[in-house]
Length: 122
Image (cartoon, rainbow, N blue to C red):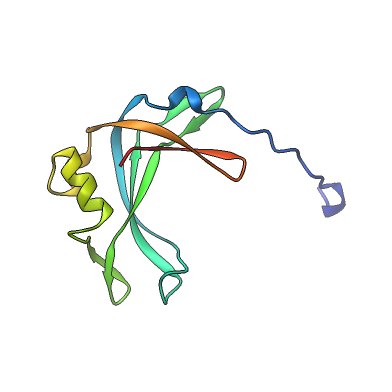
């Protein structure tokens, strides 16, 4: 296919509201770097906490949330005792992120720029 064969495709928003306020289970944790305008390096280490994927039609959606990690010399070293991850751990009744596996959360749908994102209440 050549560049001249490419064409604009109309964005069709997907309604994920059927998953709002439904329960799901945390099943994955990953450290990852994401772009950030608040960090001198232009990147921020985060902990991505994901749930079991949900299916709508032929598509799977992975409810997830990102929590900032503290870093030293560009390497993640922990989390703030006053940050959102600490508050989430307390809410979930655990002391370390590894203990989140299998915990039940309530999903939520967030809307941004004519799109919907599936996460959970922190």
